[in-house]
Every structure is written in structure tokens, then in C-alpha cells.
Image (cartoon, rainbow, N blue to C red; front, top):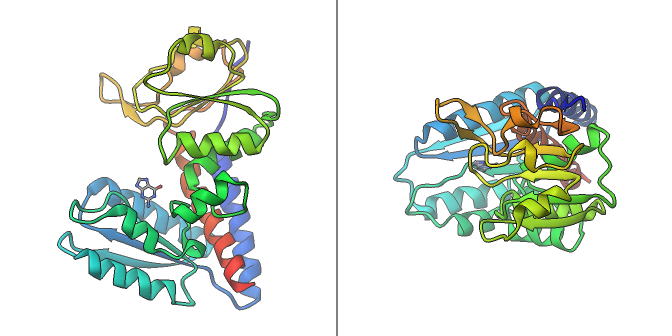
Length: 283
Ligand code: GUN
């Protein structure tokens, strides 16, 4: 079997170009999409993520409003800022970069964001909407997984989809999205028995367990499609996924690399959500 690479970088660029066209169409109507990006503290990884998000905004034509607050900022001050942005007509999306400093209650902060501006799709309103099939904002990485599959011409309907990992930010929402696409969904986790037997039935595997090279090629069914959401360091400090990429060659039909697979899709889907939120708010 010839294993094909799913090029997340290329697909993410296609999506950003589509969103750029949508932003141009909005600007002809006198609307510029706006995204407020809030970073509290000086987590170096968060700074890189936020900077990449702002660059993507510039590329697409979304105005970004940047708020870099010191670690000592009180929860009340942050909630006040979110309240102001919720009522700001130039701001269509609000993103609070996580993690927040320990003295803040993340859930309380997320719940303060208007669900209409919740471009991360983390607000319980949007999570609930997804679970009952309503058309809310869907969180970016899970939405990116589905886009990768669709744009690689992978049929989801009727297929055995096995998700390894049950986190609120990836495993659970990916499961709901695959179910929405009419997949037959199994969620596995650290307590799952006979994981190998379940994996052998999988037409589509989504790995989101957070353990370097946890899944090996010999555990897969011949022709399985593998989406690797993991972002780990191997024994040599090199970036790697939850799947042992090399051992899947010749067994998987399609596979995402790490880096360059799911990673770039998260920001592309954030751009997609910003445009969608803008359209929803501007009627
Ligand atoms: N921190 C790590 N990933 C994310 C994300 O997708 N959104 C936000 N807001 N913070 C994060």
C-alpha cells in the first residue's frame, strides 16, 4: 500500500485563502472582521501561538486587537475587559489564550465571553450546541480534523472511527463531529480494555492521547486513515505525534505528519470561525 501524506500546511493555506476572499466580500459591504486576542502573563509558548494568530489575521484581512496583560491582572479586571469587548461592535471574536495564571478560574473567564464571539468554541453554550446538533461555533482543532478528512476525500459516513483520548478540547468534540458526519464512533482512553482489538477495526483513527509514538503501524488495519493530533517530544527532543509515523508507512492509506498536519489547521479554523462570527453578528 502506498501511504499518502495529508498536507495540513497546504490545506490550511487553502482555507486561509478562502477566508481572505470572504473578508474581502465583507469589506465591500463596509464590514471589517475584528478579533480581540487576550494574553495574560508571559508564557513563552502562548506568546508564539498568539503571534501566529495575529499574523494569520493580517493575512486574511481580520483586524486584530491585542491585549497583553501582566500576570498580576486580577480576574475581575479580565472579566471587565471581556464585558467591554462583548459590547464592542468592531470586535466579532474574542480569544483568551490559555492557560491563564493560577489565580484565575478559566471556566468562569470562558463563560464571560459572549457565545456569539466565542471563536474558540469553548463556551458551554457552543459545546452544548455541538452535542445536540445545533449550528454553533465549533472549537478549532476538532473542526480542523474534520476539514482534513473532507478535503482529503475520506468518506466518514458509515466508517469505524476510533478516537484515542477523551479530552474536552479534542477527543470529545472530535467524536461528536464524526458522529455528526454519520461515522460509527468509538472513544478509547487510558482505561480502555483491548485497545488493540478496537484499533484493528478502525477505518479512521484520531490520536489525541498526548503520549509520544503511542500507536504503532502494526496495530492498524491495512488502509486506515490516521489523523495525529499529538504534539510531543521524542527521546531526542524532536517534535513528534502520538503515532509512530515511520511504522505506519505501507499500512495506512493516508496519514498526517507532525509537525505540518493538524497543527496549522487550528489557526486556519480560527480564521474561519472569525469570519463566521462576523457574518452572524452583521446579519
Ligand atoms: N492554548 C492552547 N491551545 C489553545 C487554543 O486553541 N485556544 C486558546 N484560547 N488557548 C489555547
